[in-house]
Amino acid sequence: ADRPSHTSAAMSLPFGATRFTPIESGLGGMMIGASAAMAYLIDGKITGISGIMGPFFRGVLKCDPVKDAQLWKLLFLTGLVLGGLVDLAFNWQFSFPRAPPMHIARYLLAGVAVGIGTRVGKGCTSGHGICGLPRFSLRSWISVPTFMGVAAGTIAITRHALKSDGTGYSPRLAELQWPPQWQFPLGAFLGSLCLIVLCVLLPDKFKMFMSPLSSGLIFALGLGASGMTNPMKVMNFLDFGGYWDPSLGFVMGCGIFISGPAFILAEQMGKVTAPLVEGCKFESPPKKGNYLPLVIGASFFGLGWGLIGLCPGPALASIIPKLITGSWGSPWTPDFCLAMAAVVICISWIATDRAIQFVSVQTQPPSAESAEEPKGQTV
Image (cartoon, rainbow, N blue to C red; front, side):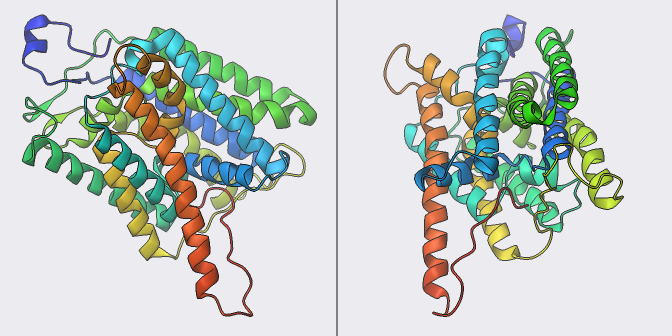
């Protein structure tokens, strides 16, 4: 389990005290980066989870046919959910420990903020971080420090100023997990490599189905192996002035180390001109412009992320595991509230999307074209 091993040390630590896991989190980050590189080089897709999730549900509500881009999103999201179940089956103590005992209103408020923020700002930790930063997108280089700063400020207020998370978060560095719990991360990493090789070798008629499913699965395995599905590990990373667990820095760093070359080869150097699947094109979200909505959206996302340590990718991977574990015992357990926050993220994204489209239509001149809908993940 991801907690101090010595009873005397555990007595002095706050709830959710996590260990520093550079090996586990580094391997998990490499899987997340490999998923992003795989989706981009094989299918030409940007793996921004909010930019996959939101437009997919929008298409469902519009009764769009399940083909082409809509089918790709469905397969990726299916793999993401299946990967969460694999995490639950083989790594549940590390991937899905008990959720923090916060009031349900805080969970729901955070879900609303994350949904609004990822739609208005068009991205989160995956789209702007794992994909946007190595694309040298100015929008992403503005968004990531913004939501990181707001999230860290939220932690500082809730934990240290208001002390609403309890006590014991005095400044200290999380204890190193040694020896590392390497079995699941290494097994998942090697399995991911096998899936990637298989997808590359398959004929296009099978690759177009297997690639997004595998990419979503690998992404979720990386989330579980790294600790991104544990909200307390995320919140401890954001607590720079208190109980600090730097593990998620290894997730982002190792993820970009793997995903970066794919984007650099295609966008910066022009060495890769088309994805492996015939007929596909590289998605190329704008790298500049629209800065005010970007900063507003990133701030909303940072607020929600700092309140409960949950962003869209881990939310979708966690929803079924937390519904399972949250159904035991009394109603409205923290695990169940976390699952509800994941549902609220999706609902909030859709509601915000409809509001944006309504306002766009109302503010356009009569002769102007209808409001443009975002295609995929814009970062």
